[in-house]
Length: 353
Image 1 (cartoon, rainbow, N blue to C red):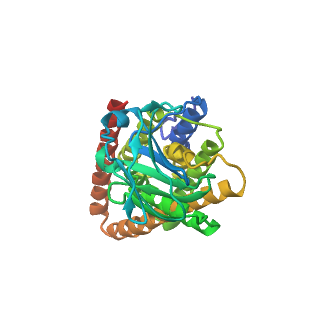
Image 2 (tube, rainbow, N blue to C red; image 1 turned 45 degrees about the vertical axis):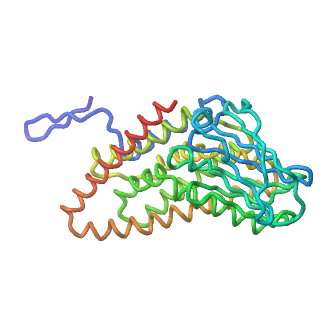
Image 3 (cartoon, rainbow, N blue to C red; image 1 turned 135 degrees about the horizontal axis):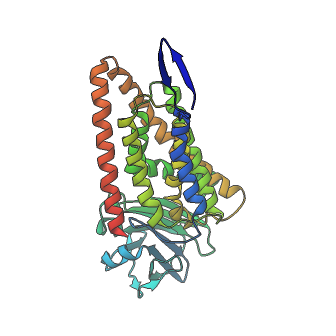
């Protein structure tokens, strides 16, 4: 241990002082290591389901995949409605079957149709827990993509003209909207980012955090799309809640916070994998330009939503900082709210599994 003499007194200096950058990197590194150590386990995420509608001249087959806990809570009677040229079709529901991914699978059969306007309505999001989302995909008999949309209780209907192949522009627009919808309705993601931005003073720093978070999303989704990694929701969902708690606690215990793009990237890998299960239902494992287009469009939607959030939050916080005393109290109050919300989600998700 080193000693420094100063006017008759001996001042001891610590042998090692952790820098701000080192402490900022720690949580992000921890998140990366957790993901790297996770084995491949496929599972469905409670609160998220998928409905694949295959349309043919002889029959329409609607297959829904969802988590076991959601399957037990679902009243499947009349949960799916399909009409052709505004004429309702009568469907037959088969028995609930195990899903290869560890969830449950339900299958409806309707009479086949030819070219025309098809309307698909799913009442599943409205019948399950609040905030449930469902990825609805409509395909032709040969598997050609006709439509894809993330639906919820408020927007539960998709209208598509059967026989019209989706163009590259259609695909890019849909995945951009899907990414935007994901971040706008992902309250845990938004609160994580808001907690990050509470201590940011410059728009440039906010942009670095948002970009790092989005880049991590892209890496995680790309890895999941090609089958390189799959982490069960039992790990991902509580870890996301823990990341929200970490942000709030750090805001409370540290006066000056810098280098936050590093943990934003680390935790962004975790947040990105939370949605990978839904994208896998869209044949994201197909290689080539289609995969690149979908991932790029999806992440562009996420980036747009996050930048929009930062453009609102950062200037607002800049205005508040004109009154330093009030700004400090607002930071602490906001951080306490972030911690409480994260703790609530953590307990909720542990109890769900």
